[in-house]
Structure formats: C-alpha cells, structure tokens
Length: 73
Image (cartoon, rainbow, N blue to C red; front, side):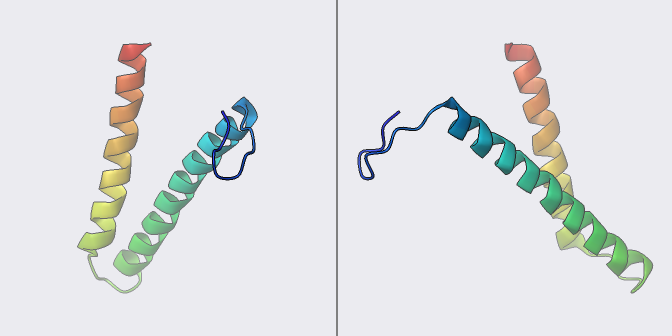
C-alpha cells in the first residue's frame, strides 16, 4: 500500500505492528481503568459507575469480536 501524501509504501509488518499496538493499548487501558475503579471502591468506598461502564464496554467489545472472528473464520 502506498500513502498518496507521503509517498511511502506500507507493508504487512507495519499493519501487524499497528494491530498489536492497538490491542496492547486497549488491554492496558482496561487494566488501568480496572485498577482505578478498584482503588476508588476498596480504598475510598465509592462506586464509580463511569469506570465500571468503561471496563464493561471494553470487555463486551472484546468478547463480541472474539465470537465474531471465531464464527467467520
């Protein structure tokens, strides 16, 4: 694939690195959100619905994508 603006070719390695880095960022983001939710719940004794919603959304999308790709391949 050639980028029209830059004029650089992109190969499969770049696309795989982008895929892996995006996946890693999602997992780390979910872990940070879970750690912050746990801190607020266990230390400050406050139920944080916004962080819980973020964690639940990430988990739902991950499971739905795994099921989708398993059924499609």
